[in-house]
Picture (cartoon, rainbow, N blue to C red):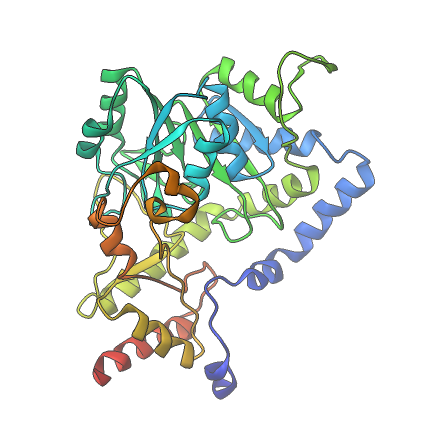
Length: 376
């Protein structure tokens, strides 16, 4: 048995383990939806919106079709569009800046903090001008960004703050859960997220009734609340379906326990590996829910290849900073503009982490990394 398990591949995430644990309640929830005949904008979606918004301590929640749509709709609901500029980080998933372009605005990148990988607040000042309308702050890998400084800058210059919390549901900053600190918070329910469905899905949370109502209008073709055939604006087809909502409601019951397990796994990684690699920074006034556990080392590619040979998966988040992506060449950035983001993109490596990861699986990862350093 142990020999067989030793040879099994350790994935980055293990969604089948979650399904094995939650199969009965999930199957029951899906059956209820199928038999209800209500599949779009029904009671399950409303219940999820209510529970997620309460969970993050926001007044309102609106389910949408994806985390990307959550960003797009949030920007549009805040009135950001053609000719506007939005400051964000070059070290994040493509969707963050993609959403800015989708509403006709221009992404403006600033470099990151080398320890947290978040947008460095002091770098924001040099990017400000009359066209700047908002900041998208990304709580990367499940770690809360420095919201006090960002909110102070936003207040000083009259900017909107959008929290890209797609990787960070349940993460806290000074006792407040991220997503409800800025003007809007955006979450993704992509399957691999800490709260993930079995397809795409997302949610916008906000404390503004006006923004909430605008999101609800935009997600449903721009139709008015009480008349779906009366349209006051051009919208989108971006609704979270009832099947996903039902599954997410069941998974939500386990979220806090799963986040505790992620932190326990991360703590053990750090204790065992910090003498070999740079491990994630932890701050007393904010939590890290470890959507990803990322290390840094100079010979990143060699370690990744070694782990693959040991049947251990790895991933690089992110190998190409956004300012060097071909899709953003028109922004006229060049190599060297954001040296910290570029440096980290060449050193960072994500290790397997999932809440149902057992000690034997983690032991295999740790042992393999230590063995690698004995060979160099």
